[in-house]
Image (cartoon, rainbow, N blue to C red; front, top):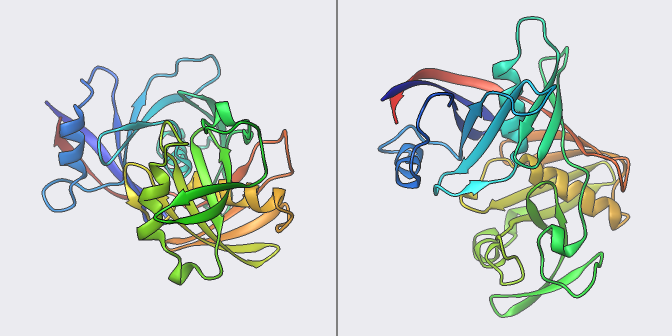
Length: 272
């Protein structure tokens, strides 16, 4: 069965978007084949779009990593979805997903803003195995102990502060921490360098993908952890390998807002 698709990216974090109503969901093997950058289309995540499931939502979406596994949330992907499905003249949207619904706004300067989840720190709800909630946790990884903040933005994250992201052990510690026994559903691992109270550099090792050019929820998680560690201001520029995001968080109990680009690369049809 051949179906239309759109290839998009946010800061180089790239996606295959397919409207899935009436279309059979591809198997994990097929998703892995489509994600292959030499034999397929190539992408970090497949964004599967369906009719809205909640009153007030404009669309419902599911997210599948390049390895075929399903994940809960994707910030850069949400911005691309908003750009793709917005009707002519529409600026405000509501995007439904497995963990709730996220507001999105098309900005006058061409950027897209998405309201992500209210950060969740309680270990069972991340999920993360810990006897009690803490601002910092010590995790054993590859023979050393590292300190991390742990939070969920609809998906689980651990954030480490490093002196220099250019030399941070992303390839060595990212996969080890991402599959750490204390994260029953695995986790995304962020390596954060604080440049100023309103600016950080960040690299993220995403579960099911590896290091990506940008991770929207990872950027949100890093700012949240930096804020609760009293290192950052409410509005922060996050510099990632693929570009920069603007993150705003007023503090506990408030959602995190993220603003950045959402770019269409090409369109076509593909066999599912």
